[in-house]
Image (tube, rainbow, N blue to C red; front, side, top):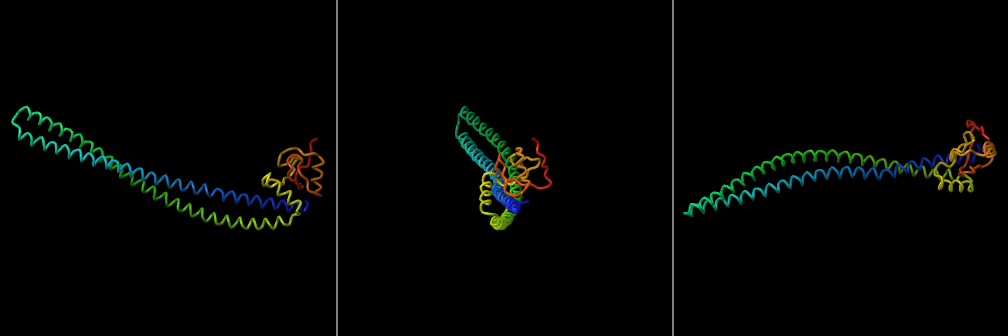
Amino acid sequence: MLETLERLLILQDRDRHIRRVQSELARLGPDREALQARLATAQAALETARQRLQHLETQRKQLELDVQAKEELIARYTNQQFQTRKNEEYRALAHEIEQCRAAIRQIEDRELELMEQAEAGQKEIGRATEALKQTRAFVDEQLASLGSREQNLKAELARLQADRETLAAAVEPEVRQRYERLLKSRGDNLLVGIPHGVCAGCHMRLPAQVVVSCRASQEIITCPNCGRILYYTPDMDMAVVD
């Protein structure tokens, strides 16, 4: 194989490795965001449980005030009963007192319901608190792992890029410029073989003369269809179908 092609293949391999490392680095951001979102969800669940319990407590306190107001009415109506001498007024006050007592019973029933709900709410807070604790521990561990992974990837990328500069410098300037242009337009799949006389990049059948020239390995040959640089190795099937 032409020595220049060998150097380009090594350079292409290095560029592929660089892109893989860069891709892994790019995924770290979304991974961190996903972890933070998971933690935020657990925190929101705990806050929702706390707000629900707080709302129940507010309702219960209001019911206590309602009972107190009814009891004050009962005391006032009872006092008025002692002062009145009219049976009709006495019965009317007694009716009002009974209505207040009935209202108090209803309020107390509602208080019992709220107490049961508050008890369930306390348990929910306990579960949410434990879930948040476990989630925070998991997220912290994963974030630390991502941080370590990021440092290792950056160090690896720096080594690869330095190595890449050395490899690129060993390629003739004109060929290197052609390679760099292809790298921008074709990605890191720009040196391809010709199995069965077909370009492994665009999968188009190559003219017989192109295959012969590529097999001779005397110069840089490009695919007439996609412009990729072609290379040949003895294990490739060189049969060309007319």
